[in-house]
Length: 124
Image (cartoon, rainbow, N blue to C red):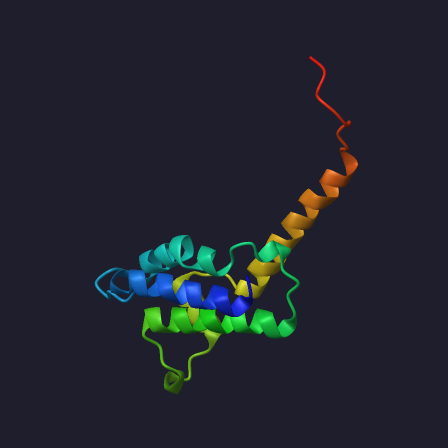
């Protein structure tokens, strides 16, 4: 699934949860936990199998930043950096998360190459 499709799917999930995510009577950290549990997985589903370029990583990161800014009511005109917005929400950098997921998947693939199963039905 192309990156733009994943971004549009995550925005549709965002719209489903928007009444909760922008409700400012709920603490920002709690809303960020809901975001991490419900919206970010839609954005990052099967990311470990993609051949990501810097441009595609940037598209994913900008989508993530826009959602976090919207959730925390921070506008670009406020001159607050994305790192500060992430810190307020208690979130990790998306690019670090992408690299961590890809390296975890690489470990699984590498382990698979070591353990070859014999051909045929298992012996009882």
